[in-house]
Length: 379
Image 1 (cartoon, rainbow, N blue to C red):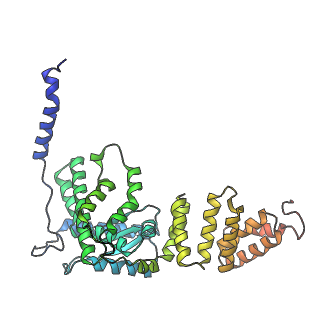
Image 2 (image 1 turned 90 degrees about the horizontal axis):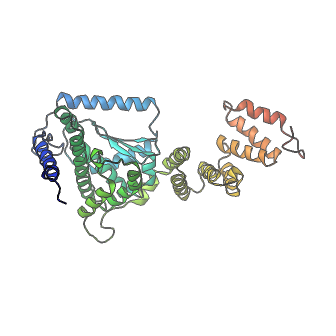
Image 3 (image 1 turned 90 degrees about the vertical axis):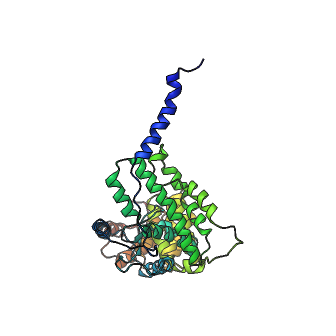
C-alpha cells in the first residue's frame, strides 16, 4: 500500500532542512599559512594566547615527568623536522621542536606553538626515517596551516559540534596532503606515509564510536585511501628511507617503550620493541632483563620458565650491577631452591641499591636464608 503523502515527504523535507541549515551555517575561517608566499601574516592576541596555553601545557607535562630525557634522540628528531620545514618562515614564530612523551599509545599531536609531541610507542613502531618524516610532516602541516587558531575562531561563531568535527576532519585531510608534499620535497619515499598510517589503523578502528559525524578525525582507513591516490605509482625506492640512521637513534628509546608497554599489558608491542632493541644491541644487559620480564608475563610458569631464567642469567652476566636483574634472579633462585645463589644475588642487590624500598624484606631473607644443603622452603 502507498504511504501517505506526509510520510513520503518527511525524508525530502528533512534533506531540505539540512541543506538550508548547512547553507546558513557560518563559513570556516580562512587564514594564510605560515609558508604561504605573498600573504601578509598578522599575529593577533588570540594566536599569542594559544602559544601561551601551549607553554603552560608543556610546563605541566614537565612537572609530571612525562617527557623522555634523551637529548641525542631529540636532536635527531629535530634535524628531521627542520629538513621538512619550508623556508623562510616568519621571524616572530616560536621555534618548532619535537618532544617525546612516555606513552604506550601510538599517538602524535602538534601544539599551537609548533611543539610536536610524539609517543615512545609510536617511535618504536616506525621502521625508518621516511616513516618518521611522514609522521612529522603531517604534524608540521597542521602547524603551518595554523589549524589550532582556525578551530578556536570557528568555535566563537558556531556552537555546532557536527560542523566543528567537519572542520577538524578537513584539516586532517589537508595535513595528510601537505605532509606528503613536505616529505617528497625533502627527498623521502612518499609511500612511507601509507606505512605510517597502517601502524595506527587497528588502534583507530577499536576506539571509534557509533556516530562517525561526531568524530574529529576521519577513519584512518579513509585517510589511507586518500593518501594512496596522492602517492605516485613509482618503482620501489624512489626516495630516501634511511633505516640505518633511524635505528641508530632509537635503541635506548626501545628500552623505555618496552617498559611502558609491559606495564600497559601490551605484550605483542613489548615483544617487538625488545626484540628490535636486542637485534641492534645484542649485548644489552638491560635488554635481556626486559626480555626476561616479557617471558615471565607470557609463560605459564612465570619467571620459572626456562626462557625467562636464561634471559635473567644473561642480563646479570652482561650488566652485573643492574639492581632489577639481580633482584629478579635472586627471587627466582630462592623459589626454586638455590639458597646460596639467592644469597649472593640479594647481597649484591643491596650493595648496588642501598636505598631499595624492599631493603628490610631482603635483609630478612638474608638473615633467614637456609644454609647450604638445607631445604630452601624451611621456615
